[in-house]
Length: 161
Image (cartoon, rainbow, N blue to C red; front, side):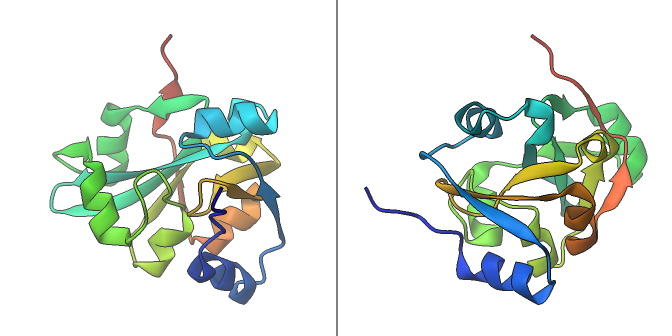
């Protein structure tokens, strides 16, 4: 099995930002939900990262895996007319990472705004995807917010079903 390490870009970014973090190795997973199951973490302690197309641009959203985007609330937060989750091939082009391997750190690296849902701040520490399917980063949630220059907002609701 080929081991897919955290991309050097992400590792260097964390080092440069002096963000204390721990790299967690795990079996290959593609979703925040599977990540939580694999690491035996609560869904509320695992962050999922999404790219959303807003009017004419993109923003990155980070929210607990236990919640889903509330598009009405998000439109208000962003003052946008149209908000939709972008197709994965767009993400691959924008960030040059495999679909599903997007991390919140890619926002800073690509100068895209990063919005962090306030619900995530309830977790002292959070597990974040870091551009790899087999390694994630465990860090203080407030350090994540600082590192990605995140804007705090309410844009999620409890997952249905």
